[in-house]
Image (tube, rainbow, N blue to C red; front, side, top):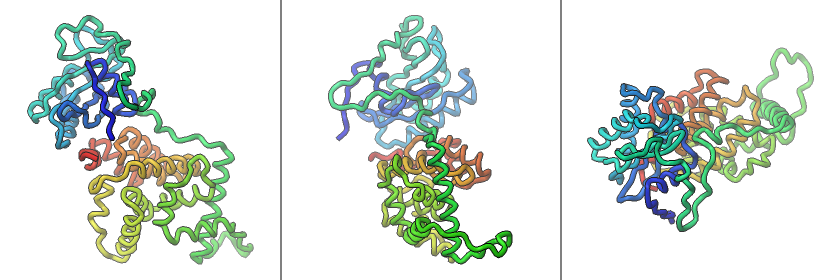
Length: 378
């Protein structure tokens, strides 16, 4: 059941916005769509670098209002600007707020209040009697109210995107496991040794690598098991095995479709992939998942997959990391964390220029494209 917390005034409302988002916004425009006085979530975008009236403010306003209007139940909205600038007689980013308000009104989405949280105070753009310097930031104390609420967040929108930092021994173990898995797959698939190997005897195949290679016979079963793995105690061969899969587009796409649905969805995606490789057309309903369309995924499945993928990306040797980083980007995007998604995708492209999924994720973020399921009620 949702927790209902009533904000008695603007200060209490502002104290709750970070909890709606899960972080404390910095240099951001936040829009909280409302339905009959209740919030329907929150959306955040970067503030334009130029605070004066012009194309930058108009573009941001048009993008945000367009997104808010896709929420069918929304009948109004609250707007909050978070800025490093000081609150003075002329509130910062007023041009952006006015442009957004005009567009929202024209779309039938009236703005109930437009607030600003600055370096020295806070206030409302609609308050003609706002004192110089605004109201004190000490007004914005955490508002617990009745019921159980998560602890107030501390980091900003970029917090939590950095990969874990495993020790050198763990990374070395995964690198060795990845080489052993390569050798096992080469032996199973009958790949002849390179000419450079000469007549030297074939290297011993690690039995653990052979066992891992056999697990790849049933990828949907493997991808489902991933959701139960403990990232804090991830075996080196498991990390190498998942990294190997996520580095191959055909297998990666099966994993993403399955994590966004269920194991049966993975079976269907695996079968469709095989048929596509034989010349059949790939089903549009499966392809649409990658674009954020279709049934709303279970966020817990996506969260668990992202947690494991982040650890695997951190453990893999850098040259093997691009595919897993791109998967982290897609999972973060599917969860509505575009700032994190862009960071993961950018890291993947620094390792592998032209990486397909990473470029797609970055294009989603640049265009302000969010999954369609983000605009539908749970």
